[in-house]
Length: 630
Image 1: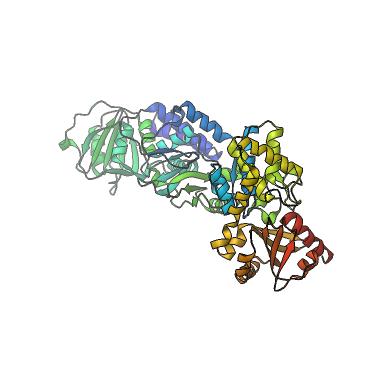
Image 2: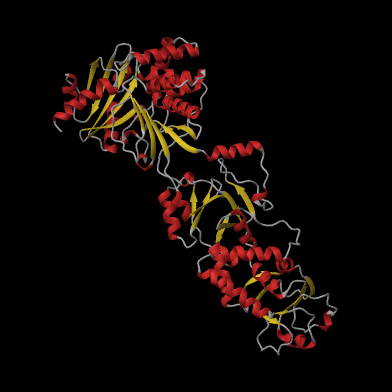
């Protein structure tokens, strides 16, 4: 069959699939033909790189391209992959966390990991830790939980894929093979320094082949000589050294050809199935390249070739195979999308959506802290993306939750405060119980469900209870709290009362050296009472003397916080658990506090007898007063 006819039929077949929008079929079928028609003869290392974007996000050392289906993995690595497939759930307390918030998050994550093997639960913190909490973590051998300032969906929440990249010089045929083998549609293009230079996808490859069908007699992209020789498995018969690449018009000769028109120096003549005749050689007097296919070794000497001929190659391939090899040798840099959006791991999902949808690249490349690619985000990734799954402990109000909680998928709430305003997408497990500490609930769940607690976890939970009840002295303390502390103390082998006093003393250290604003924000809760937003801070002291000395400093800090956060009032409770009193300072109108506690506030402060618990002794009376004027 005439090679030109073969090319036309092949082109029509590809164009049919292209018009049917089956871009991958075009690429896949062409790959299969290419793989059957030739084998590689280079022996060189390929320029493609394969990285495994694992939990660490660190790329492996670049090197020889590895066909991923053939990778052998150890049993341990397979186990890790299974673990990574499990759904991840965040367990978090409130912003400005106290000891109960941190300890209940760690304890509940421990409990859920023992009772729900289908998921991986990770405790985080929503803010900075106070000295008391740090003391507890160090005492029982726990690391500080990772900081999570926002629950807004981020790029790092998109599942990682095995990242495959190519170099700018990678030929289009190799890129297509990588797409097929790895079931992907886009490949980042990176240089030797791992800098992203662009991206190539299946649509780009299909478009390039559509261009070939429309302009079958032109090779519009330069192909390097070394690449061409490898792809054709060719022998160099003549090379004058004047050209190191191939580009321009293509002319297939089946027998004889007339003399070429002037200005045809960029023509490449492909001779079908035979040693070139003298007529053909005469016609080549203005052409630059001659490729002879399906022939035995030619015997012409350099002097016998036309003077304008710079390159002569011979190959055992048929003319159809040679044409296909020419087009497969085009580097991806010739038609890659050079402007590709770059994202960091902490970019929000909204930014990622805008970047991908506004880009002609149809994807974005994710970079790590070293600006190396670790993931690729496509439009389908954004469609399949799910919200962060979270369990809230020790709070259930939006104002106290980590920012972006409204964008999270809340699975459970474990709390001992009043029911707040947080809404969910579906029915959830909501355990709300009037006890002194969320840690009491967690300890009870472990006991009821037969979950063995090591001493370290028991120590955390006991610390949370003692902290939130001020060593079992607050009015919020219940018999369940007392029983839980006794049971946990036996597990640890510790004197709970002595440890509780030591715990509170560590919590009061903050008053000695810290700035007033930092003291206020260490245990600060924002609440909304009948459309009135107030902030309430609390700290443990064993004497009011230091408070009186720094009262003006605290008042100024409270005024600043009130203005910055747009609050109606800010209250600060310095609570002495031994004398069972609290020193109250208020920034803003004081009438509601005077009426709630039947005191007269002199210069914005007062001493409240019997007020130790913020949630039971302080907020309810203030809320009752505000309700009368709502």
